[in-house]
Image 1 (cartoon, rainbow, N blue to C red):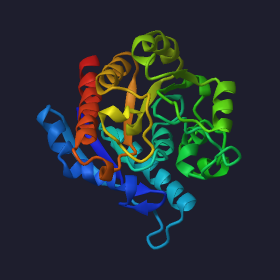
Image 2: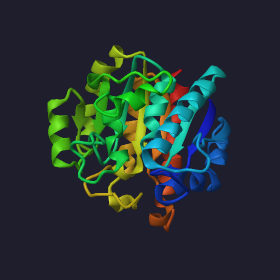
Image 3: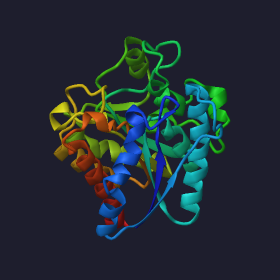
Image 4: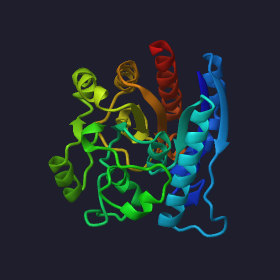
Length: 283
């Protein structure tokens, strides 16, 4: 498979800090070499915001989403699979815009990312990503991303979310988003994939590394118990790519300062390979 790594090394509009350090660390640790050794052709691009001198969380984040959308379209135009390494989950909105209409999403995360400015307890923009992607908030700014159209809630499968703000949890309960816990997902996912798959032309897979249980290692400061084992995560990814037309993957929220022994880095490599190899086998 021909893969284009798209690096978005930002966290809350700041470059190479906290989770923003993750994309460059994964590349420096040899992700390109790892995928190439498995027979894939890999090139890479680092994405930067349009404003070079001023950094503001909302402004810079949406500038990055616009740039991600452009680069995803460019990758697909030359037949390359977009593999996005992002500090924050917000890159997902740009990926979805780059893929275009009738895109569904498989969202693997410890958090729902379904807050809005009215429900958030932290004010963290990243916790509003899925709400933005489904058209619940930041509507005008999302509309400024070329190619963006909201993802239908019934075409979103949320896996492993367990750390929710009260208002966010209530909104998810009222929504049409399909949800499975980390415990249930490996055994119950296939009927859902069969049901949701035919409703969309293509799918985006979003992997936030704090979906892993901390017993596997800590991906970042937001990791909470009750997540996936690495074994179950890899099985889950393999099932997803076997049953859905997956056209992009993001691996997000890796803060290397929490990964002193490199276990999470190794899991990220394995996840990227599981998806890439699975897509080749499914063709």
